[in-house]
Length: 87
Image 1: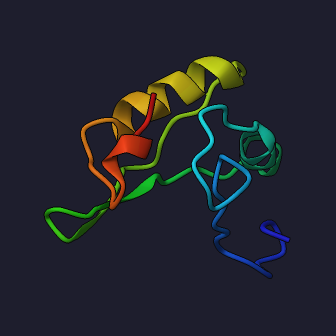
Image 2: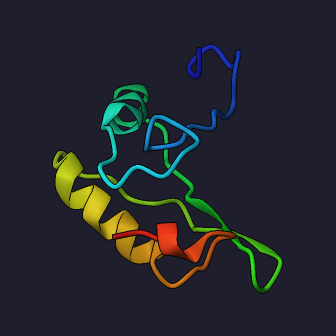
């Protein structure tokens, strides 16, 4: 669908749910690498009332290592419930 231009973007939560989940699923990684499309990370910094987008996030063939790097990117930003922050 990306190649045919039918869609240009898709939003997924790596937790696979809207609730806090410390272990991220890897389906979003498989989708992005399989489709050959970049990831842009998005977070909400609740205390500052900001929506923050990353530059295109480079992926490797190691989803677990990529997830650790993503969590490092998210860690400084505080959500509405900071006790549920990235661990």
